[in-house]
Length: 161
Image (tube, rainbow, N blue to C red; front, side, top):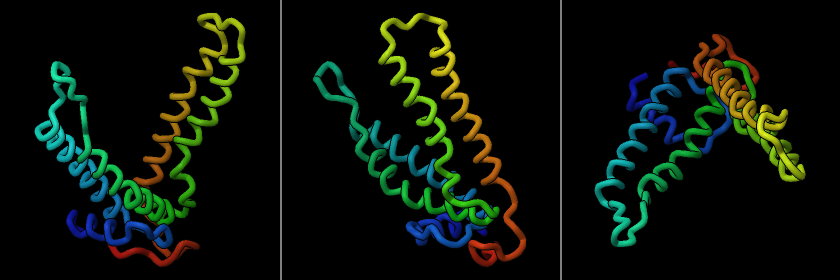
């Protein structure tokens, strides 16, 4: 699958979370998204320069717009890609869920603590949260990079290469 065809396929199926996505389809779409975001950021720097002396804030409207437009297609493509390796698309939410599951209780406990001391067990927990999220990101990337199942699975037929 060519990079252009893969990108157009992902954009055409922007809200389709059912079915499967071939490895080439997903992994050509990822750099296309990154290039679009980098291009938007470069245009933002040229068209909307920040000038603290004149009170102009740092604005990034094109980057925000491109991010907003590409979020749903990227989620759908990742969801379908996980289906291709036989996993539920819900696994795509693992890194964020791991970070929240770690941070929310730790921050609540820290807020309730009358006096937190440096080097306490709570600080270790707070430092462990990013580590757990990082490890879940690595696991997710490995799953997204695996070859798809060569036969029809519960998510549908084998996608075209």
